[in-house]
Length: 272
Ligand SMILES: [Zn+2]
Ligand SMILES: [Zn+2]
Image 1 (cartoon, protein in one colour):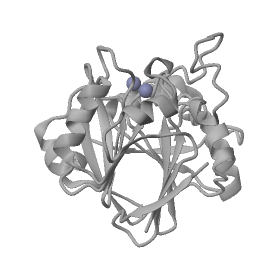
Image 2 (cartoon, protein in one colour):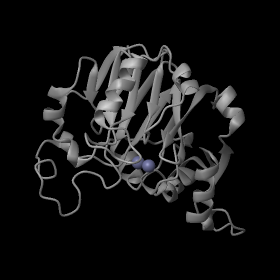
Image 3 (cartoon, helix red, strand yellow):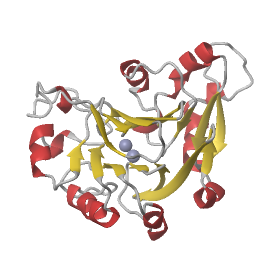
Image 4 (cartoon, protein in one colour):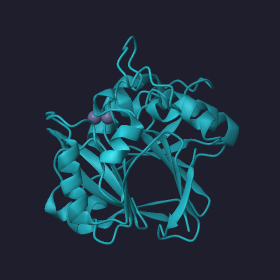
């Protein structure tokens, strides 16, 4: 199984992106499901909830901390995490935040998180105990850095690394996509505004969500994603946030145009 791709210039001499999870909100296999995809014995058909890990010049950032965050940190062997940057507040992207405790304890510091208004409200509600008066040592410790209009216009800096904010829509919800160097990540999207398309010019590697082939109220269909790829024209695109309805990894891969690939858990895209 080829897990490391070293074909693209991601824009930084030392840069590596790991797909920690490539499954939709329920993951694949779905509990109790006996469809072809869910019973497949190909490890690439087994998908944790969608998240990526970006390493640039020694700065390690997870995008989202879904329900599989702990498993994903263990699978990728992450022993230093500098920040978590959030896309949006749906549970499949935030539910595992409590597990930052391991990093708090190991590194003896508060976890820096980056969140738009919707994510901040959700984190303060769902993990209220982490934001109270108590200084109990067992609680997760996070510091919220805001992603708002200023960051939309000027970008933001995580431990010296420049990040570009790529606002997109997920039905009525604002979702943050991100560009680092010539790599871009957009998940949970059914509309990309023009200003965001402009920020995607020159992107060489794109990871984007493609839930299934049929219409969905808050996600692009596979065909709509392929149209977006046509506009952005990256050298390579990897699909993520896949549901069991989209078919098996190998079948889907054989249907895709040149330069578009099916993502899978554990795939590493490293700078040339
Ligand atoms: Zn999602
Ligand atoms: Zn979502």
